[in-house]
Image (cartoon, rainbow, N blue to C red; front, side):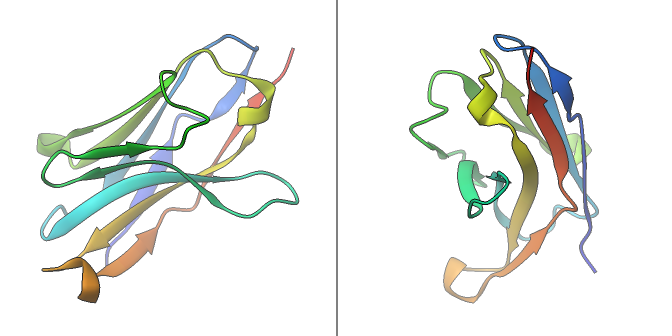
Length: 119
C-alpha cells in the first residue's frame, strides 16, 4: 500500500515563504507527483505537478512564486512557496500517480497539511 506523508505547513505572514515536503513509501512506477489545495468552501484545485520525465505544470495563480521539485534519492517531493498571499491559505495535498501509463494509473493522496497566510 502506497503512503504519502506531508509536512511543512504552518502559519506565515504575507510575503513569507514555506516549503512543503511529501515523502512516498515507494518511488517504484511513479508517473507523476503533484500538489493540490483546497480552501474552505472551495473545490480542490491543482497547484503544481511534476512528471517522472521532469515536466512541470503550474496553476496560473502560483506561477513565478511556487517551485515544485523532487529528490529521487529520498522519495520526496517538495513545494517551495515564496511571496505567499492570504489567498494561498488552504489545506495542501500531495498526490502521486503510479503505473505504467497514465490511462491505467492509480492515484494516491496524502493526509493534507494546513497552510495559513495571515498577518
